[in-house]
Length: 308
Image (cartoon, rainbow, N blue to C red):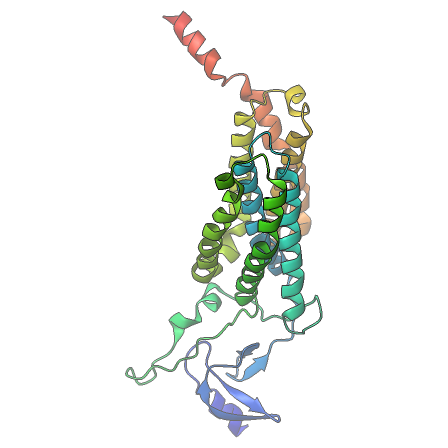
């Protein structure tokens, strides 16, 4: 009881004492990686499995570089290039292998399942801001990964993605992108060298905010990009929508993102009550096609001209 009583004196939200052979020892300080201070301010090993919402967050962060790869490959490949599809597949392979390797190297090693500390509040992502100063002079540094491993596993995954891309993509592009000029061949790779540092900083600085906001980010961005794509492709009817297989692939991809966002938001409340909302997934597409003819710029201009 004395050791527990002593441990209660640990200041701050994340400081604790280490347990050695069943007894609490040492002074208050940072808990080892993979452990977190409990209510008694004793460092306790995290043995829980991530919740479904945690996996959905990791899935979102894993999809982010893949979607950016696909976007820039499509942007720089050109309409006549036959190399885009193979590059898309290669990008998916890079991210898939990186995800598997990252999971295998995360404790417990050699297993696709991971153990994690439960996320309780936003401050768990920013423990460096909560180092206590008991005497208002000296700071007790207890900065740790309280959300282990949700913070670092994403950064490790991005590092593997970058390594895999640099190993595979340049050789592939050099062999198959013959239709493009020398300066254009590697533009999608150059773009990745820009966006990887950006999303890494985004995770490092805004990981906690992204954890709570990613369902809404997915919904908003997928709706905006779908509207832009349908407008740029001049899709105004179901006939023009199904005219090309590529358009259907883009459409169903956006529908999956809509469903992903809805399910993620539902987990913040009650999933069972929110599953019927999945029937709304095709709603934005149907609304766009139904109203596109009324917002055609040429029609608006012609009606405006006839009005004068």
